[in-house]
Length: 305
Image 1: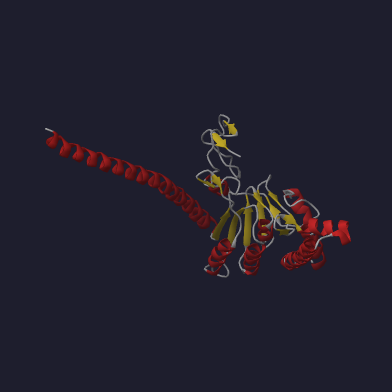
Image 2: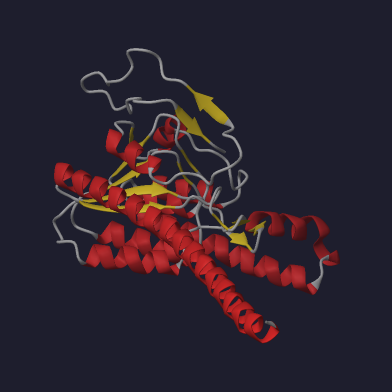
């Protein structure tokens, strides 16, 4: 009996081992299907909206959207900002656009590399067709630099732009120069070298911004505005509202198309245990009034910070 039972136990052991292997294989396959399948569905919806927007406006639509405040991989936050990969993609899209065709840029970003932002802004400024930038929520720092290349900046009534003062690492160039001014001879060699870099960065950014703005306004006004935005007068996250942007001379309007809001809904923030903001739409608010630029509410909505 013992000799007969031993082979049977060996067979069941191998079957159990094979079953565990198949279980984990299927589990991994399901997880990958859910992860990438959801992304494919979302991207398809984004492409559909962008295609609809292009058809309505007869333009090339470029979406440059960074959800820095929410992106994560396995719970680990991942920063997202304007980088060289973005500038390569945008420049490629501009090259593939006929010279006289309008370009619409949907912009939502905290900023990023000065080099990448300047490359995008320069390419947009040199495009012969009309360039319109749509800012549904915010376009800070390098995003503002890109917005300044447009003939028209369409902002939500509560959207903001920001200063373009350069940052050396995580420190504002103006703050480094201020520290050297206060400490004077007591500054270390490293601080003095950073101050030299900070001074050069301020001059470089101000010069680029002035050249960009001279295409839209008188030279003296462009130079004064370039200094104001790049000298570090405010903190780097200072909000430039629609009213302030208009007062500065930016070509700002607030006729935001509903499709832009719909596209932003397809860039959701990361899921949490519960939403930090929740609301239920009012009865009878299911459709927008004719000519309205607001997004209609079809169902209870939840948003997260």
